[in-house]
Image (tube, rainbow, N blue to C red; front, top):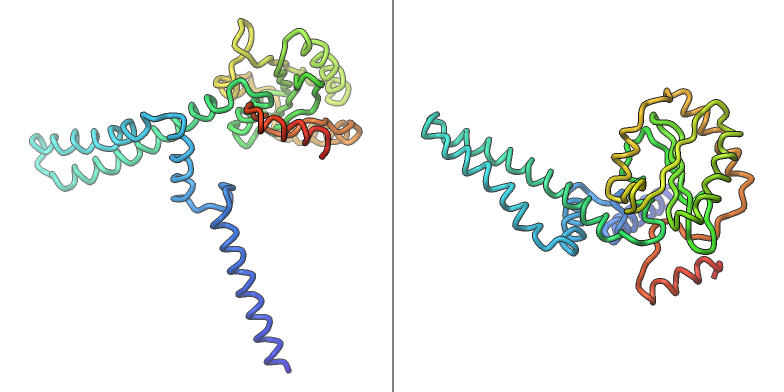
Length: 256
């Protein structure tokens, strides 16, 4: 009896492990992917919006190898120099992929409502971001991030409508995070606004005003504020722009 139960438990564990492996293999979540698969996925998505990517990565990889190998005429260690060139080439190719991937991501989501969330995801771990804490029917939205540079509210949408929306959120946050200055940013391409592609860097460059213990304290207070908020009827993340996708998003907003 005990042997049968042990065999059944082992079979169940093997089945669960196999199912989990199959789930991860089919998943598009980077957290479920291995390093090489993550790189392959990043390349695939970037290449869709950046047709020059393979040539740029190829050049970044090959040029250091050629340069280091040519240097063996000065320093007679061709094998060592070639290996060093390969190492540098791989590093430069990865740097090139990361930089082009960022640009392609911004290009992919530019102009979509909710696209500020893409930039907030690129902030360091010290920053805690909450997308779409407030919004209106025109899909103007306010996002929030909290980190070493302080408490920041990011407005996304039509500036005239955002003025009242941001002002209301500033008052709410100042009452909860008393003593902390709330910084506001409007994302956009017009003068005085911050473009999507520069939003993360702009936030990271804000003067450091908060220590880790202060961030933790303010974060707990913000949870109390969020707990009494009515649920914002806007899907998280960038809104699709194609008519078919937009129809699905409107249905999600209605709770279907």
